[in-house]
Image 1 (cartoon, rainbow, N blue to C red):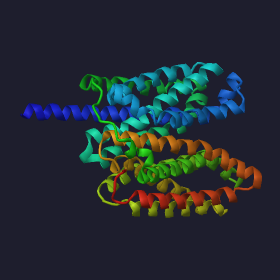
Image 2 (image 1 turned 180 degrees about the vertical axis):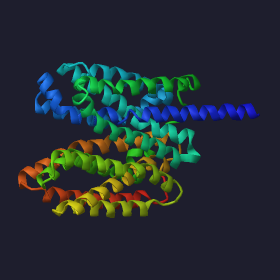
Image 3 (image 1 turned 30 degrees about the horizontal axis):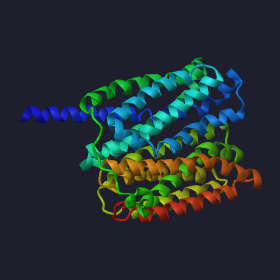
Image 4 (image 1 turned 90 degrees about the vertical axis):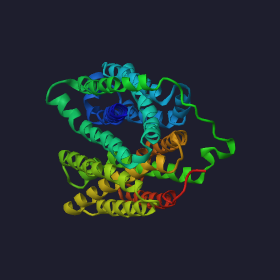
Length: 394
């Protein structure tokens, strides 16, 4: 009996380590690209349009493949689908680092596609295997993902420029992390080698007809939109307010660092309460205050505002990850909701930066764009309030 308990404990630990290593690859390969855009353009002569498209491709992959991921997992199993996705990720990262325009684009498509699959299926796996510790494990998953995202955005340019690795070798470094994830996931392929036997939901109960599912989906989409808009445009806003490019970069990193602890804390808190509506409202208020600080030409207020944006962004992201599990009854529903929410969510995220920039071009200032972000934050609170009620998708 004791040996069986120890064996089970080892299995759980190995699974958790596998989830952590896969999670570290779900944002870092993407955020490593932006700081290297200038070097990439100079080295292989790509246009600004193609350079911008490198950021858009993964978001489009998320939108297109997220609803498909649960269907594939039903045929192959969660474990095998995640395992194959990590292999595709390794291949994509290698191809992407070859200094040619065609390989850069094709590799980015593979990387985005692999990450899209894991984005959807890891929360479902957590729902199935850690149903009594959802908050803690979701928090660990979220902080693993976002910590490596922040590290990648901070070190990619110094690796390429200061260490003279070049943009392609700087990107190639993330192959190491992906290979570790592949190796760490091998025990799961031995552990579960048959597709999950889960009955289809009746058509009348399709998740796309569920009011709660749409509330979660729009909440996910709005928080993604705010984050990606600020990642794209916050440095430019700060530079126009008198900050240097280096200072603007540090403040963007600061925003992401403030985000980190709350992606861990909020899932734990959300998992311990029946209703998450208050969390959503407080997140919305803090986000509105943070964005409002960007209107004012005062360094201290701007820094405080960016800190508030980071904290509220971490709360919103952590809560959206928990909604996938708190609002569903089983792993199948969790995968379906995750797929739906991330499909719509990242489609909004792909549109947001372009719309934000268009409004700036039309008005020649950031005020209208920031007002739109505040309205977005208010809507985030509203949809989060209703999504946070004590109910399931139906």
